[in-house]
Amino acid sequence: MERIDRRLGFLSALPLGVVLALSFLAPMLVIAIFSVMPQKVFSVLNMPDFSSFGVIISQGYYKSLLWSLGMAAVSTFMLLIICWPLAYGMAKVFNRFTLVLTIAVVMTLFVSENIRLFGWVLTLMKGGLFEGHIRHWTGIGWDSPLYNVSVIVFGLVYVYLPFMLFPLAQGISMVPDDARQAAADLGASRWRILWEIDLPLAAPGIVIGSLLSFVLAAGATAESKILGGQAVIVISDDIETAFTFGQNWPLGAALSLILIGIIGGLAIYGVSRVDLDAIMGRKR
View 1 (tube, rainbow, N blue to C red):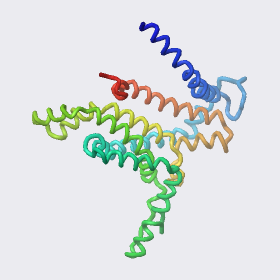
View 2: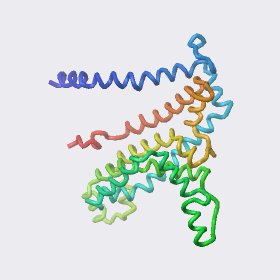
View 3: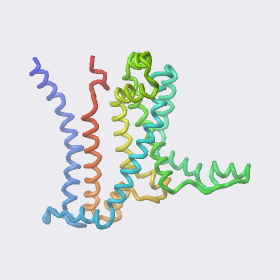
View 4: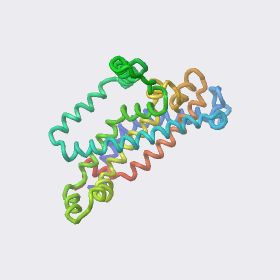
């Protein structure tokens, strides 16, 4: 019987597997092939040629990679700190108000990311909505906070907050109230309950939310262009330039492959540490 179930499961998953292979693995294979072609040469006759990877080091493209990963890591950590109390309230405190809050957060996703970021530009720019009104009423003005690294990180936190909030709320909802009450009855402080009960038991939601936020932030472009004014060049912008204006597809493919390798490795490691059956509610 178990054998039949496995065979039926394989046959059921086969169409989706073929679609994933054609839509995901095939483009990855093409990227890998282009990455070992000579610079600005669209030919497989001179393969393999790893000059593109040398250019990444010699011309400093690795700096944009480090900026992207660094800002993604900082924004992910900030999102975890910001979203934890809100997610805890959604899972344990707010009750019916949780639906209202969920709808409010989801509604932000219905508006284009670029439009929302341009809204912040109009708000934070010199003489904009915020500084302009303050100066009008008080006579006090200040320089715009736009076009630096901190405002790029703010944009990442603002845009990707839902991707941390909802998995985190799901993870916190998995923490049994009885365990927390028992620890409190035994004299555990709130901080000890947080570190020894809440965080370990909510780890699946923390990992999934952190992965989603980090992966999206590491490949983000709009925040650095719109809010940062390209004060910092991120890896996704270098990839776009190599594939378009530079017409250097091997370089763009090499940059893409490195980014995919780093993010894919982190994602695989993170998912391997998560109990997906518990998250999906399949465990009894």
